Length: 607
Image (cartoon, rainbow, N blue to C red; front, side, top):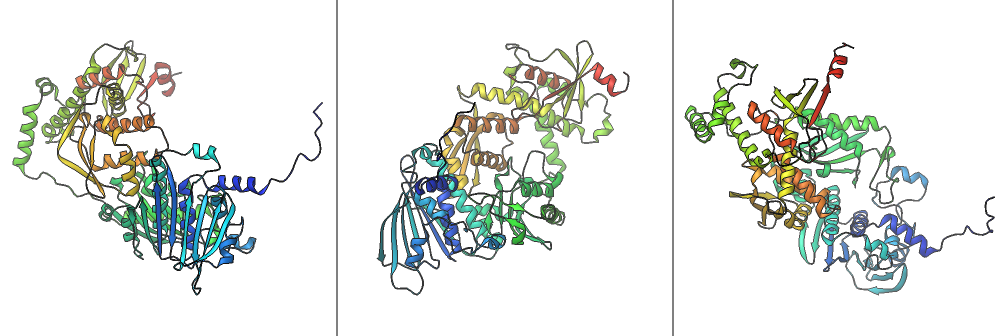
């Protein structure tokens, strides 16, 4: 029999508990405070928004947002701290045609419930401003003050009365990174306002009011984008997309550089990200993501922004039509753009001869002897350029295999079954057969060498990874969030073989790189690493280190499309057999597939 319960066990929560719960939904971290206050400033029509952050030795101590907006009268200023009090909507019908950023009436009440807030505001047409001090949801004082038109809100001691929430905050660098990303998103979404972001008085971001989308993008995300972006402007009867996309060659390992705002609201939308990715089609490799900065305008009756307490997510009506319109806009833009990358082709016969002679001079004798066309492919298949093309590629592969030469030693456990190499298919896959010929193996050469390099880098991490200094440092320009992420992880990069120094206010100079990268380093790899650091900021140092190690291994590994000699294929498989996980690469993709004789017979309908 169930236990009989007394009456009156269900009761209304008190206001303090209700406010604390609401604050937990809306205010996740200091960046949430910044976002809510900035959006209030935007709604107030401010043409200048200043964000000042004060950081102590361990955490963020205060957030202040000042604006030149319309300001508030004394009665409205007090009412703004009451839950569900708002000037943005009057009834349920207004929810289907929202044009403002804040509308729930929760932001200030939620912030005040978990911190100490000082508000100073003056409305246009009044001579005296109002100052309100509120802590933990309780009004401490309301007074008249002299103030410029607009509003300034200072928030101190965030989560002072919710220690459990403060305990789960990340390091100050991580929390600052979230603030940078929040301000960048708002500055991009609202080019009609100028933004300033300062940390302990030092300016980190500055934008000017502008109507030129390209100028907004470069001001917010870095001037180095100015030569890479492709403007986009297209529309359908229900939506319009403006902004810029970046050439396919400058893709990223994650979607961290896809910045979206819908009707002026920064949002995250997996559907729109997939639509952007689909617009690039086969122009970017699988597993990579484009860089895109899109401002999308959609009929407000088709957008539901009331699906998340922090209004980060949206729900779309006529979603298929909207998503299709975004994909087509990107595809059409790319099809009408010259995507050929400028380069420095070798046109002189003398230069080609000198390159070829240099390669022959430094080729090991053994490699020169085996550097012949792969069996089964005629000389005419390669054309007259065979000696130059293939000796160079074989020499490069030999160098890459020598870097992992210690894996040739039969010192560890061999985790692969005995096999003999048959040959290579499509310059990317090694075919092998089991010793008794009853099983066929197909090995992805790039994934195999990626696993080999990853294991070796992990093994050498504690002993010190070999590095090589660059004759000319590689200089990369980064935006505010990227600079912070890189600065916070300098020690990890040093441990992995990089030497990186600040190079002026907006750039870093890479002076040394891991030896396994050879001379194939470019700014793209550094941007990949920084992009991972930004996206993975919530993860532990060990997890970030593993992610960077996997990126280094991927860049240093033998590429698909590289012809291999019989000896090189055998060495690669031997090295693979001594790794910890020879069946998958560091990113979890398969390295080797096997087909038994029974499976082959079934595929050919012999059973």
